Length: 169
Image (cartoon, rainbow, N blue to C red):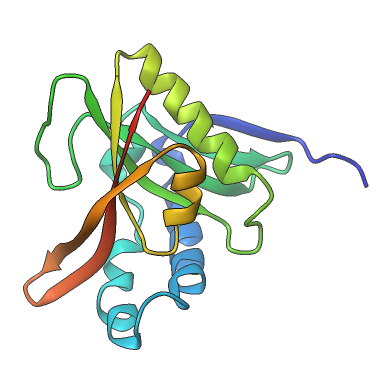
């Protein structure tokens, strides 16, 4: 079998529809085994949407096939998902997703390795991550350690269970 050509590049506003489609198809499929139906119908539709600010941040990336299909996305920002800043050298992993039909093919690892390299070049010394319950083993394999469970408030009465994770670069 021929090796597939994949490209990792910085996302642009033009990627919004493709990233939105990837998130809305993959998050429900990937998270179903680790979250109860109540979370799947209330919280997942809120998190499975592309965020224009992230795509415009300059530190959000997409993995594209030779045909231009977006197969994975994710990145980092200095600000946390809640909007605050942490210690001077800490950044935050943001909105990582791999096409649910392509997991375990190295796309997520390549994407996050690229993001960590770029973060390191920007002066980031540590990364904080709010991982889905499903993605904990993925982040652990990349050197992140669990700091404990957190509930992310998405809207009044809607919480999303996650795991806070951390890694030094």
